Image (cartoon, rainbow, N blue to C red; front, side, top):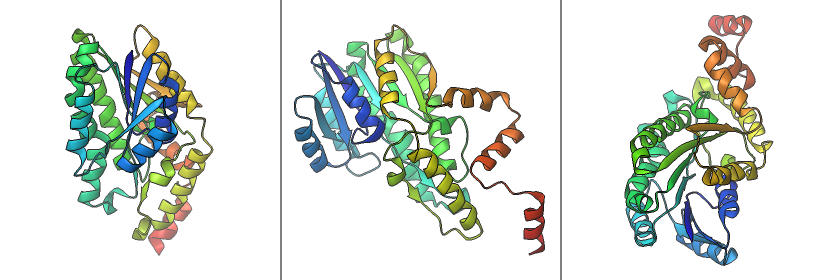
Length: 282
């Protein structure tokens, strides 16, 4: 019997992964923030997926992590898949310190705490760790600087863990999706009443959500996760989604000023010389 833990499994990519990994010889536990929802989902998926509470960035985090450690203390853990997270939308200037800290705690710091706590169980099974990052970790997004920063940090930590844990037989990878049709837009914390940024921020958010809601099926990510779990050796990082790998390569090869210019144009917030002169005159 294999044991798989998927965080942030209540919907979208996380739920698709949990469904894909579940089987007669695999026990899958998915986490959600609320214990009541965990019970309801466990009943809904009875016999295929179990759900447990894990509220990252909260007063319950320590207790939730301790319960998961106890779950795998005897059985070991074959695969840990980090998917839980959320995004802040707004200009860097207007996001306060408390929101910044919470963004990094949920997306980076608490997932690292969970990893450290579960490493004895992962070592026991010579298991695998898969981080669900984002293409935004390679291509910084306007008005999503904090989200991009957390995903970039996650990719760096994934690579460090891969090098450090490799001698123990533990493989680590970071899977970086582009735009997929998930519930992510509904979980976003948006700051739109932001003074001089307001008009541009609203235009950018419209473009971002258009891309996300018209994105690919999350099952595509789930199938790749299964492929990684069954492969002899997982890649270090992998972009996934329509055009994602091409964008990843382009972000490395294009001059930085051109890359930023194209990003602004894509989100409809590039300003030409005439509009810049008008703002200066105003």
